[in-house]
Amino acid sequence: MQKKKKILISLIIFFLSFYGIVIAGEEKEIKYNFYADRLITSSHIILFDEALTQKIVEIGNKIIKASDKPDMNCTFRILNDPTINAYSTASGEGSFIYVNTGLLDIIESEDELAGVLAHEIAHAVKKHQIKFLKSEFWSTFVGSFLLEFGAGVAGIYLGHTLAPSDVIRAQQIGEIVTYTTGFLGSKAVAPIIVTIIQGYRKEHELEADALAIRYMAKAGYQPTAYIAFLKKLKSIRDKLKINEKNYASCLINAKPGLEERIKYVKRLILESKYEIK
Image (cartoon, rainbow, N blue to C red; front, side, top):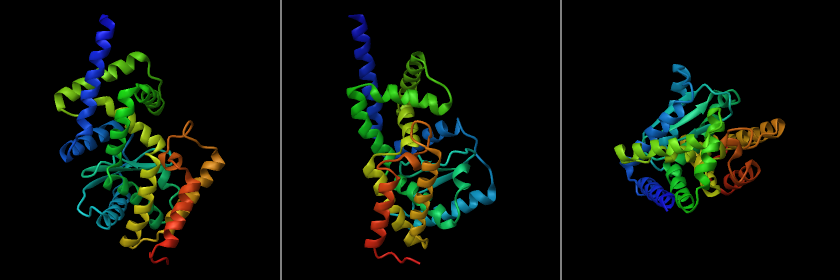
């Protein structure tokens, strides 16, 4: 009886802490971006290359000005990570956008880089991380799958396997953070890491692709460079036999898959009135 009571109390705490993000307004979304940035940078080394960072900021800001939120503020970071990946905290105002050195090693033009940044900026504009949290909140509350799976993924991502005691400790820390800050706490850890590895929902990834080529064209970049970049990712994936189980890259692993995304972007460009150089 006592055990059942403890489980019920834990479920209530879990519901209330997660509900904080479900009803979050812009202020809490900004806090979320900073929380997510602390999580990400705690396990990565930021590369401080002034010239390279400035180039990324310049391209990124051009894309933002061409987006649906031209006044949105974003922070761009280069992470010293050989993994071919780029991602963002994707929560509107104050979002952080990360580009790995592994990605920069395969970029061959400013237009390709603009395509990657445009995709991540589109995620931020549409607040896909918050939408992902909201959708996963209900499935998580119904069952503990995401928490357990996410904790395991987090362990792999951070370089070790989490024991059951680690999961409990994370929950406890999350409850403290939620109580003291009024925000989500560590309940966001699993979804953040899952999206870094697997990407967002299919509809969100396709929406980001569609917006990316529109933003690129409006900012003066060549949309077909984004197709070339996606083809390059597909070639690397096939050559190295990469998948979400052995490679932590949402750029490569995101649904509905690179083949479908390439076809989708090609069709959009052909059907659009974008000027193709």
